[in-house]
Length: 308
Image 1 (cartoon, rainbow, N blue to C red):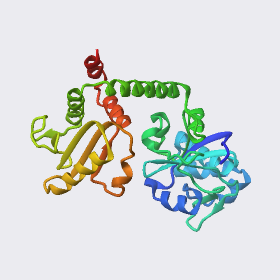
Image 2: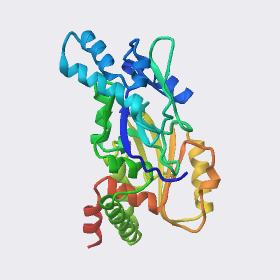
Image 3: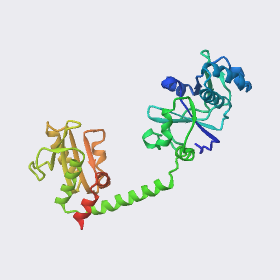
């Protein structure tokens, strides 16, 4: 998909309380309420007549009348180069719309979307609300129907799949940190490596049933999650092999009290993932996964001190 380059950007609320969101997205239209008998006047640009209707409907309130008429004019007059956005099921949807405005039986109006609504950037990455600046998503609370959007350049970059410079710099720094953490982990004494994994589980809310240190010959950690009410069999290896993993997997399958297995290691020449493909109860943590968890769990300083 080619990059977009809109001349204007508008948010549109699809129906009161979002009642038209699903149908508009499915049918490929944008839809405006503001029901009135002045569709033809709007097409003809007779905004005096439209304003008089809404002035009466708003009981002489000039401010709300102007707001209503401006939103209706935007729907009728913005061309096909205007980017329209809305929000549905915690994702941002965007489109461009044909300039032809049609009146429906209930006096609402629609414009056909050019192509279709999209909730992904041009590279196919989902545009989830939690990953979009709040100054853009705050328009969801707008009480009217159509309004402008803050940070339009940011939004266009987001849809075009670009990363702003500051974010890219931070991402690069984070990746360098993870790479350095991996090197530190590989140099840990096996006992300290087990202690690090124990701390990761503890930071994540897991509780140990037994102390760390081989109380069972096949289990390094016996942990329980109060949040999920699952009990996990944890085996930790600095260096491991496929045969090692298969041995512990067999041991895990012989226990009835465990819901999940975590097999954790930092060095293995064999890709273990295909061995347990399709099994959602088996979790493999390799060096990259462990490094990410060390960073996200706030254990980098602990690791530095251990290696100092």
